[in-house]
Image (cartoon, rainbow, N blue to C red):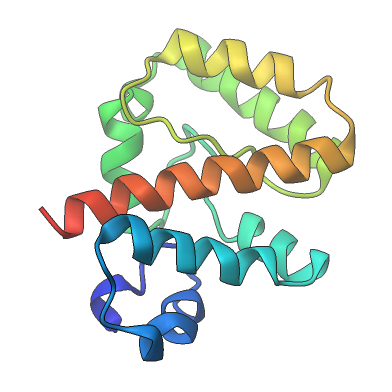
Length: 149
């Protein structure tokens, strides 16, 4: 169970809640069951899950998977100007929505991420909560795929 505890950032209880449903047909089945747990959460619990994710491009303590994902997208090696731009976007986003910008950055580059950041700052709060959860589901799928290779 602990093996899958980090699939949803800092929220191992998602894996714990599906543990008794094993055996799973495959990683897709496990992912579907885990996302169903998140879908059944209250809005407050979903927002807590979103808030468990680190800000993009920010240096500091975060889950090892997040470190690797952000490094793969070039976010750990930003130049000073880009780092300041990302810091400002993170600040604006958090101020507007009350949670960090979450994006499945695997396979993306800095430009893709900055474009999405700016577009999503224009979203309505409820739409952005839903979008953030969709991004979390993508992150979880990437992490599950890495675990069950």
